Image 1 (cartoon, rainbow, N blue to C red):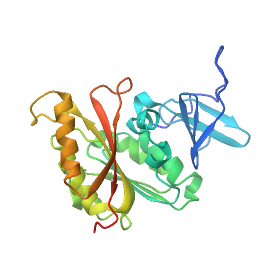
Image 2 (cartoon, one colour; image 1 turned 90 degrees about the vertical axis):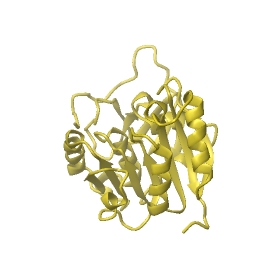
Image 3 (cartoon, one colour; image 1 turned 90 degrees about the horizontal axis):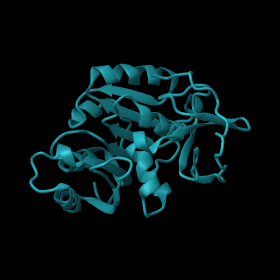
Image 4 (cartoon, rainbow, N blue to C red; image 1 turned 30 degrees about the vertical axis):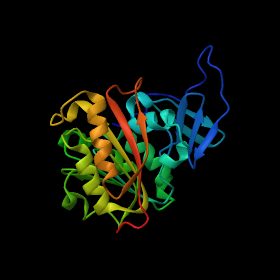
Length: 252
């Protein structure tokens, strides 16, 4: 639930100020901290720190609570390639209560959706959906959808055309198969995809975690998706990886 409880923060005692590094519109890194430009000034979503820089308010994006944020810090490639662009159409499968979605909204839509973007957030849990709906009331352009993120007909009525960016984070068997199917339907050619894969959910696969990750990677390679990187999240999310893919330009 959005919260005002955390006041604007000042540097903590002994905390050194790192020079901000811009990762894209409304996203920056300061040392090992990530921040997004808050689309709803004065409001935290999950009790995260906020701070002002001139007239702009920034909201901390905590990697231990967000696999996308963890991937930004762990990638060996350009982190900007992982992020969606302002005004893009973004699809989030397995949105939970909307913590990470809120940061994606900061980037894609901005305050009052002045970018004209769209973030379609699909979640199967009615309890989590209540939080998502509350979040969307203050965030124009965020579209909460209650339903099974594995099914195309759940998404089709709500998304405008094809997605420029897609993230899947669902706990079920055959996560890679589901991702390939949904990306084939909704991700536009050249679009960016992130698959957050949890080894423990791949109960149908034999072997250890590495074997399960390798099997998923093989499924991705046999599809119309180009695997750009397998990002290890150890230290933030154990037994998780994020596959960063791009839908090949010739895909239809």
